[in-house]
Amino acid sequence: MKKIFIIITYFFALTIVSCSEKGNSDNNIKFPFKNNTSNTIGLVGEWSCCAIQSGTGDSISTMQVNVCTIINFNIDNSAIVTIPSGDKGRLTWRLNKNKVILTNTDSTNKDNLYFNEGEYEMIFTNKKEYTELKLILTDKHLIYILGR
Image 1 (tube, rainbow, N blue to C red):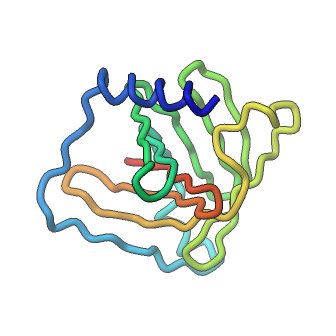
Image 2: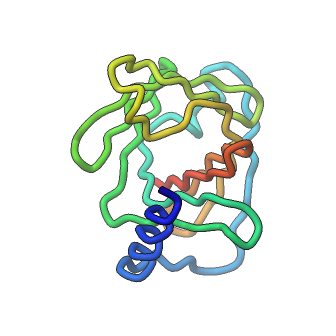
Image 3: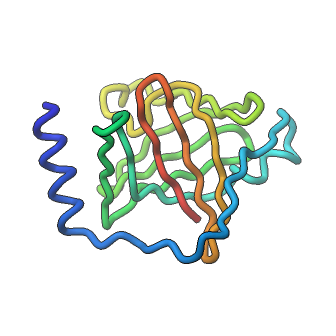
C-alpha cells in the first residue's frame, strides 16, 4: 500500500503544476484561540484542501491535486467535507488553544474519512493572495494544507 501511495504521489508531483509562493515576508501565526465565538472567526468559513504532506525527515512526501476537497467550518462547531466526487462527510470541531479537535459524526462513512480524527495544531500564514492554514496531526506525521 505504501508503494502505491508513493507512486501516486510521484505521479501527481510530475503532472500537476503547484502554485508558486511570492515573496519571503509571509508571517506564520499560531492563531490565539479561546473557546468563544468571537475568536473562532479565523477558522469559520470555506477552505480548500489541495495538498497533503506525510512522513518525517528525508521521507516527506507531498500530494497535490488539481481538484480540491472543500471543507466548510460552521459557527455551530459542525463541518462539512465535500470531496471532488461530490460525496460529503460530516465532522464536529472544537478548539483547545491553538489546536482544533476534529471528530467524525457520519457513522455510515467511518471507513472513508478524509480527515483523521484527532487534535490538529493550526498554523495560519498570510500570503499575498490568500490565507493558508496548516492542520498538523503530529502523532501521524500528517499535514493538511488548506487555503482561502
